[in-house]
Structures are given as structure tokens and as C-alpha cells.
Length: 230
Image (cartoon, rainbow, N blue to C red; front, side, top):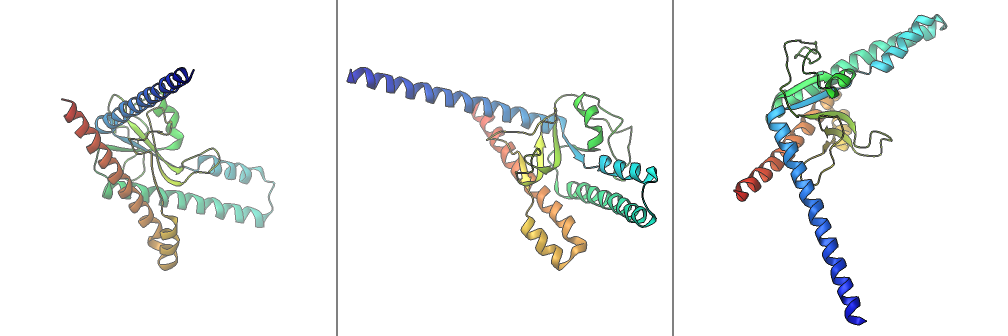
């Protein structure tokens, strides 16, 4: 009976080890797929448009249900939202232009995500003036996507930062490949206190630099592994 129990424990351990190895292999292969998608297809950055928020404001302004004071307040809030949204997107684009060099990078608004997920390759990408440029063409094949927000977008429980996704716009979950680069909010608040005019830009520059370093390390590790297998 004792030997039977030992045999069962041994078999259970071997099965668990084998299952874990299979999971690791699957994750490693997925990481290699992400690396290939990044190098060959590029990175598509989905900029926040605040379209729904601003659309709701404009609709409320059009109803005529507001008094003059509230109408003025809402109009000012709408204008501020437009300015801040454009400023943020310019800063994100600038950060990638200055700090990212691992692949082609494309920019589009989150409102165009339906086209991106459907496989459409042009007609909604942005030039450096944040204007749609029909001449910008996404290469054929898989790519990686990126959004600015929280790691757990459903309830904002995760860290805020640059979140990587696949071509289907699903957030990456992988132990061998970066999934995000979190913002350093403590440094941001300190910089915002010292110099509010540059704090936001510095925040994005640091985050993109962090992302580039993490991606470069993963790409090197995956490439070295492929070379060892040859």
C-alpha cells in the first residue's frame, strides 16, 4: 500500500511537471509570435479620442435645456477637453518619435479600432499633425497594438500605463514578453509640482523609454534562444 501511494505521488508530480512544461512551451511560442509581429508588422498606437465624452457634451449643448451660465460652463469644458486631448496625443506621438526605434510605429484614434480589428490596412492612420493620411499603409500580416490606460480596463484595478495588445486588440498575457510599461505617477506628481508645463511630456517619454528597454530585452532573449536551437 505504501509503495502504491508513493507511485501515485510520483505519477502526480510527473504529470504536474509535464503540464507546467507544456504551458511554458506554449507561452514561449506565443512570445516568439509577438516578437515576429512587432518586427515584421510594427506597432499600432491607439490614441484616446474622448469622442463619446465630447459627443455627449455637444448633444447637451444642442438641446437648449441649459441656462446661459451652465451653457457657458459646458462650452468651456468642451473646449478644454478638446485642447487637452490633442495635447496628450501630441505628447504621446512625440515620445514615440524620440524614444522608440524597434519597429515601424503607426498612430490612429481609438474610434478607428473597428477598422483595425477587421483587418483594414489604410484610410485611418495619422500623420505627425494628427490628421488622417490615406497614404499611410499598414503592412500585411500580424502586428502589435498599444493603448494608453489601465492594465485592467474593466475596473481600473491595474497599473496605468502603456498596454500592449495583439492584432485583435486583446491585451497581452505572457511571461516571456512585455505586456505593459507603467507610468511612474509619483515622479509625475513631483514634476507637475515643479514644472507643470513639462511634467506630462516627461511622463510619456519615460514610459516609452521603459517600454523600449523591456521590448529590446525580450527580443534579444528570444533571438538568442532561436540561435541556440539551430
